[in-house]
Length: 143
View (cartoon, rainbow, N blue to C red):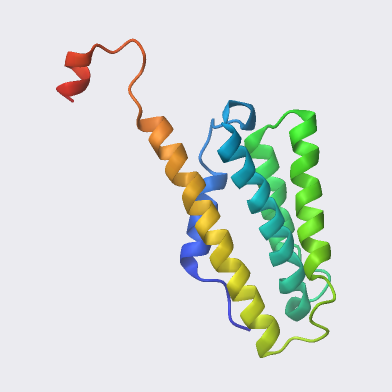
């Protein structure tokens, strides 16, 4: 079976290993992107299981890691989990066997996930690179 592109895995690793960006500190657009990513991870989980079997937990474990890193409040954590489950349900059973069509669907979802992960990782890098409120304009300009 064709595996997900390395750049998708790297983007998700950057997102999940990014550290202190907590869900409650994110703006509405970033929170929506996280919900969209959770849905996409659910889709990926269902599609991967078509070829790898029901015991494969690769994308589910990534979702668990995402919720651990985000440390979302109870309500948003529930939304993330619900979106994952909705994405899973949307794709579960869509492809009864592992074939070219199921692999293409997995790649299409991977590209969507890559775009979302890249968008989130860019916003996190921008936030991390922003100067602190205590820095003077001169010290920022000289850096």
